[in-house]
Length: 267
Image 1 (cartoon, rainbow, N blue to C red):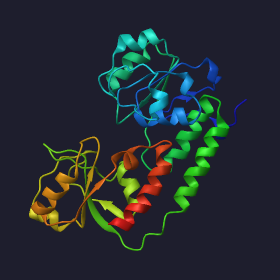
Image 2: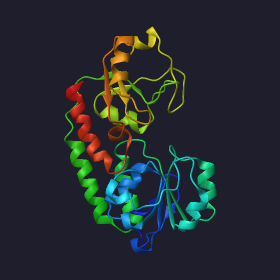
Image 3: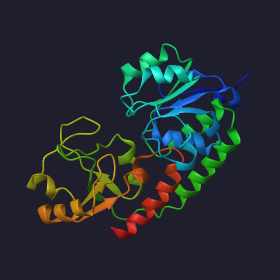
Image 4: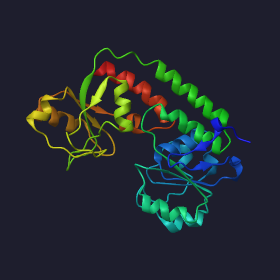
């Protein structure tokens, strides 16, 4: 019988039972978790993915696409006959997930809000699909990268841009903001706007509160041209950053922590 410390509870509070990996047929609607599933040695158990699940490229090429993270093809997923569906609260639409849950036996809901939540995520998937050793190896790699971060001596207020038309940023209670805090960067967001990904307007008052502007390469494809234009417009330092390294949890978080360390030397 599983001890209390080994209960496999997902972000929706649903308790999952371990299943032999060979018996699992997994559809992942979360790009970063598709990568993690592969890195746990479970790529052969993936039967469906989104078009945004692009890593690791060599392994996902053979896995059928079932649409995007929000506009999935329900009938195509039904034909794949999955035993498990992996979703995320931020990335997937609840009405769609509810429809899928009507006939997919096991829906695993994820919602990492901070870097250290990756440890729970590794062990959750490692426990469900009975690859605990692989999960612990990723835990060890994560903790090593986390420990290697240079202690922060000076904090800065940053604006992390994820979209334009309208311009959008991230608020404090998000995974991205928590990652940036490890580098000594506190995310600015509009006062009184409780949205996790709020829109904002450029004003002299808000620029006075910001030390550095970060333009993410995803979900909007900001480029160095945007960097140059925004530096001229705002008079603030602007940096283009790899959005996958900062926003993707799962196995990518290990490389993401190392990337954060390097960014601190560029800023």
